[in-house]
Length: 215
Image (tube, rainbow, N blue to C red):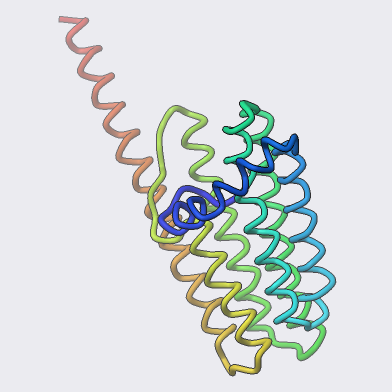
């Protein structure tokens, strides 16, 4: 569920033995992906969306970490597949939508705050755009695995904000969301710039080849 990043690598090493043990026990990695996604959605909608922020943070964190196991399980069982990769990416997008959508719903329902609703939705849209740029770049044969705000980092920031707000720490969730908006927007720019540089280099190479051929 979490993309390649220092945070993802750190937690991946911690949970690798558990994933391998579950894989050896016959648990299919796709099942773990689905359970992780559904658990995150349920925790977001039922807990965060109803203002139970700390409980929601704990539930979501558990299911996010649970989904870290699917990669280790797939490698341990030899069940790595393209469908599994697509399923995992789809689960990521649904989980993100649930988390930030639940926050926007809670801000609108409990104490209408247009700025916080906007921050939640902007964080959602920019997070989705960050992942889309990378996927679309890979689809046309380029790479865009750069940026200061990978999904792992974005999840850590929002979950820390949700959990501390649930414990009564003032302003922390607002700060977390607006920080996410800024760093996610910057990451989108970083990835688009990387794609542009690669695309421009390819065009220049093609132009040189055509010129050489004509000569």
